Amino acid sequence: MSFNKLYGLFAAHKPAGITCSQLIGTLKTSLLKDLNASQKLYLPTFVEVKQLGKEASNDDKERSNENQLWKVEEKKDLRFHPLVAGPYFNRLNIQVVSGGLDKKSSGVLVLSIGRASRYIPAYQDALLPRQYHVNMQLGYATNDYDVEGKVIVKSTYRHISREKFDRVVTGLTKTSRRYNSNYSGLDMQSQEAYDIAVEGKLESVTLFNQPTIITAKCLHFNPPYVSLEMECLNEDSDFIRDTINSLGIKLKSSAVTSRINRTKDGPFTMEHSILRKHWTLTNIAQCVKDSKEMVKPFIKRKDMFLDELTDEQVKGQPDVQIQ
Image 1 (cartoon, helix red, strand yellow):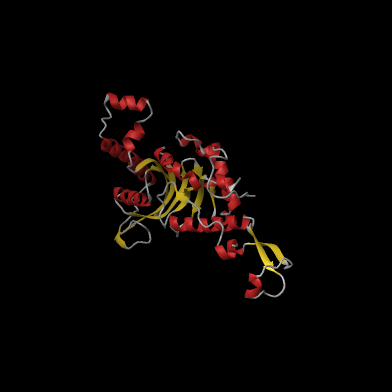
Image 2: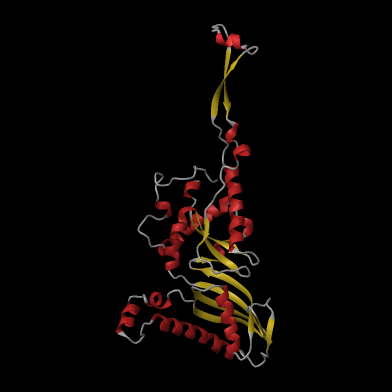
């Protein structure tokens, strides 16, 4: 694969403790280093003409001398050497496709590289759900709903059973869907709503850009420590923390979020998420290549998709072969 065709969507694993901007900066540094290392050194040449012997005086230069010897030499132009002009590759376009992960969150982060940034709106408009594993702790609340925040409330949690917890979690999904249906202004009992549902477009009409919980279930229940699996749309980390706080209130207690880990983003799962130690040019190029068919059904555009471009249509950066 050449550098000109190194563009598409791929997933990277974002660890907790860094922002998405810091992740992109580290990824760019690693890829640019590999790109410049793989680029073969090419220096243009120029012709230098020298007069042999001692330098001629001004009087000699005015006089024509057919017997004067000259040396013609071809040399490399060192002005274009990387040590003088700088690295050959110094820019790389990498953007976040679907955000929502703040500094304290971790998990699958979908990114675009190169000219694939034009597919970001189409991917976002596909309304692909994202799945999370959320760890929560019962018994107290903080000012920012996070376990590291300032404690403002302490409460008991001994009265919370697994059955009651599951019942309240199920209610979160129903409440979220009811709110978005009312927000859309669409009467769910009307013929219009029925026709839209038959066409399979009901979710796109009712969801808009509102955060929505599609499914939620308990994975581990050992009070005060509880783990949830949530599938959401249009959410971010703050929405999840706020949901956990509301869950604690509905349980007649209080709760904070201790960990948010995204395990799935549309077609991308943890298996497709490339770890920090594997952020090399070869691995990223392979991930981009493997994900093209995976994301193709969700990119609905009239122009051609990724690898369907011809060599004449691919222009811009010099052609560098990636081993």
